[in-house]
Length: 192
Image 1 (tube, helix red, strand yellow):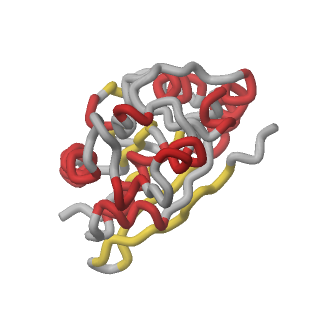
Image 2: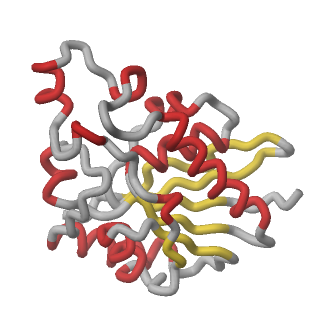
């Protein structure tokens, strides 16, 4: 088994990420700050060689990939953000006014994906990354990348709640000896 790394990049800021709205399938574009954040990723990613580069097909991730210097990243639906169903576009505080104590990771969303369905998608991505001879680079979204990190470590998908991830940040997953580990997490994102 190759001991490659998987580099995770959350897209730059959008109007909805700034306000804390759940942004799953709605194709919200990057803000001007989000575009600056994406361009700033070139310095962090540019000197590294990747055998595989994938992106969510949603514009906020694909544009982040392009502005970071990876326009050839292959789109895959498996990296789309969690489908929030009836909670799309709403903040957690707004949802909790209707459903006190609601927690995405424990309670899920009506008319959307379950955490197990998100995990099935990221498990396919992990298998692709582990099959290449070299490091992989993934451009995607906050919650799907958090589930991916949990699954990389062999944790239940709901343990993605333990991995906060800001916009335009980089995380690196790898190995220590034979154990999957988090090498770095939530790096960057300081561009304003």
